[in-house]
Image (tube, rainbow, N blue to C red; front, side, top):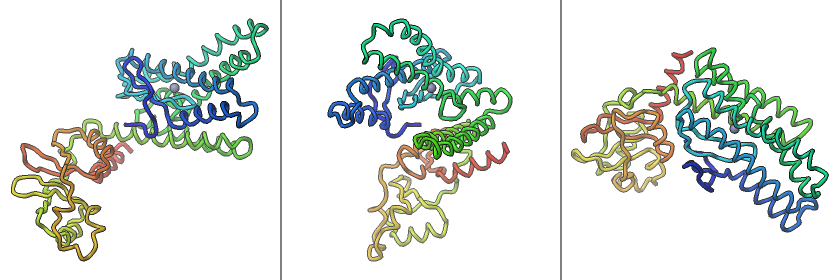
Length: 353
Ligand SMILES: [Zn+2]
């Protein structure tokens, strides 16, 4: 799944490294404030510190990626956030112990950096200029905070993954994910309450943690529940089609009658396009007699019966569409919609209980 709101900055070991906008804005804001002296005390030294934070986050993520790749897990992208990052893996580690090691190595890297640099800092403190002293002290502190914060047992932090892998050795993966996510959400709520009384910044982090927990559990649920499910298993067969020469009015009537929101447009044996309720609903009354040909989408993505449903869900989301006609040997054999997928998810969810 793609990460929204981030831009690619470089590649390392063939992995694209992306900067999340929140981090990009923070870096730009601090450099701007420093360069133009907007806030007394925020000078170029503080700006360099944000660059050091960036480096600490990159090292953290590279550690995750390195261990994941050693287990043969491909890394799709690394997204850098001010509070750590995300190493998006192409698949989930099968063995909970692998996940445990992949998750732990990130925060450990930061803690080890802090542990090595601190004695060095104490040793050379006398010979440091005030700026270098400030930078080194705060770099150590940042690593310490990054390491500790990411060990919080809540998604999307690494600690959430550590917790899940611990639980996954005792129960099935889906239950482990749900339990870890709900623990994370409760922690976020406590954090927000503490934030109200002590530090409003904590409320922001709490919201981030809450949403991360929610998203993680949903993503895992969907990919696990739909594992091995093919289009032919859940598609709607007996597809009603419409003609390109049918009028808007006629097609709208068909929609209300059959209660489906989208129809392939066929002429003879050939798929001409697809027409949805969304295409037709806003057409003014005096144009209801025109043919749907003018309003249909002509470039239609299609699916085949053997395709995995998880890949369909991605196609639908990326292209922001609701359904795909299913074609087998040039013949329309079904249609698969988001609704079909959601129904299948619900049923499978209730079986697991
Ligand atoms: Zn991490």
